[in-house]
Amino acid sequence: MRHFPFSIRFLKSTQLYLGKHDEALSVFNSVLEINPKNEYALSNKGFALGNLGRHEEALETFNQVLGINPKNEYALENLFVVNLNLALKELKVNNLGNASKLIKTAHEYSSKLKDEDANALTIDFLKEAAESGMPVVKAAVHEILKLNGDKYGDKIKPITKAIEIVETEDMQKYYDLQVEEREIVADIVRKITKSDDLIPEEIKRKERS
Image (cartoon, rainbow, N blue to C red; front, side, top):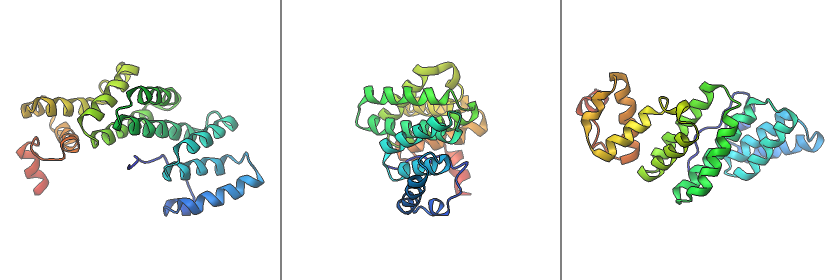
């Protein structure tokens, strides 16, 4: 599966930027043999593990970072992301109970983040869910709103509107939106349906021009 991006706010490792996660992991493990509480090395080890798909190990590593510094924003963001990636994996195989628990755990970390960061990461998660089809994105939206609908209701409006358009096949619903919102919703509709059948002609013409 493709994972939506980890935060790289504090990342400076050239090897990680180049995608050489195995090599970077080896480097950071060597550093940690000397100093197991090196916060920077642990943070970047977690990043490398996450991008290698070793999510459980990434969770453990980022929790070690919080054990050293409970306010480490990099660890908090990536714990949020890892849990959502795992939740998405569970949603794809219809393990709704496991997905719900993971999203709830992610939500607990999000409460320690700045609202704008938590919102952006949540929307990234839902866009990724949209690419997996209607059942997955509907389940993801349901879980997010169940936890904190007041916080996310307006923020994820493009996702919920796209779902509504796909379900009803009513393209007139685009015109309930502001002009700048229509393209965002159209992009999400396209992710869900993997086609242009429910994309307004005006948007397709603009894309071709």
